Length: 380
View 1: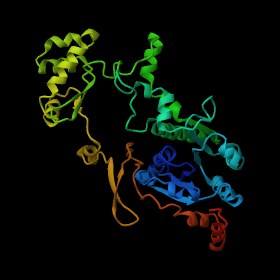
View 2 (view 1 turned 90 degrees about the vertical axis):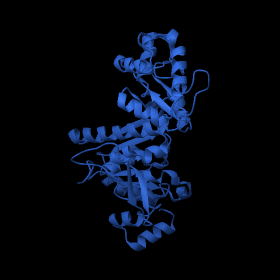
View 3 (view 1 turned 30 degrees about the vertical axis):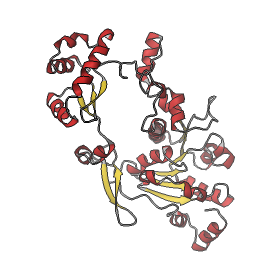
View 4 (view 1 turned 60 degrees about the vertical axis):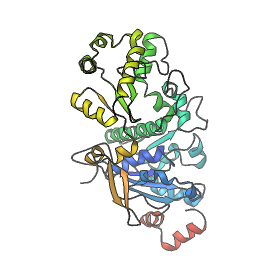
């Protein structure tokens, strides 16, 4: 079965993680994605994230070249989506911005995924994921109350921006189905981080006090929502929020006196200290077995290798294998959206840099001599 986005052609001008992760989502669900990069970026590719280029084609194109730009517009006339991740103003200087593209293809959905968006006081700043998480507000909430903000181990800005870009593209395609017209999609990674703060924002608006690191309901303040170390140096995530779960936990540990104190701020240090000492008396596997049986929202903090090699990832097809271009089996993260009629999936391995340049040009009507000339002139 073909994916939900079959017959959708996406030109991805972005690089590194955010944009390619967004186009990976589209490609996984059947879109034809042609990644377009300048040849000068070949040595800047990051092998560690090459998996996000699965299911795609890759071609080289010099958008500063008149002939390269002409090829781009040949593709743009046929495309449904264009995704770019340049700083604001760059595509306009190159002459490939939304205003230029919609003159030849008014149905185009043109998504710009940037750090700070096309407007606002931050628009021209340079930045990376930690900057977007910082400006977006999430970074201030991560870490203990008595320490500095902690850098999260996943790219909050890059990946939330990629997800919102994919959502924006799909909404624009849906709207185009009604109106026949495309539109511009402006997604800022900083905005995407801020959009992850409904609880923190709600607390601020209701109380007038900004939430503090390590001092919110979901950040180490309460015993019932916390992380505890086990005897073997591993960790448990404890979250018996509902009174019935909390009651079961307290009774199991022989502390029924804790039951009415779940939300009492004056007793949290005492309870946290108790559970900290209690959890150090058994290894993680023992605790996991106990709490699986009790079913009270306490579970292990799994290491990445355990997740990737674990039964749940296999059962949910979140780790899949595919034969690479060299014939060796390659592991990939699976797609988390499971559609029963038009399922997505990993179909082809990441292409070599520029592998499909000639094939795409042949589709556009270029002959072998033309392709050789374009290469010699630096247009591709």
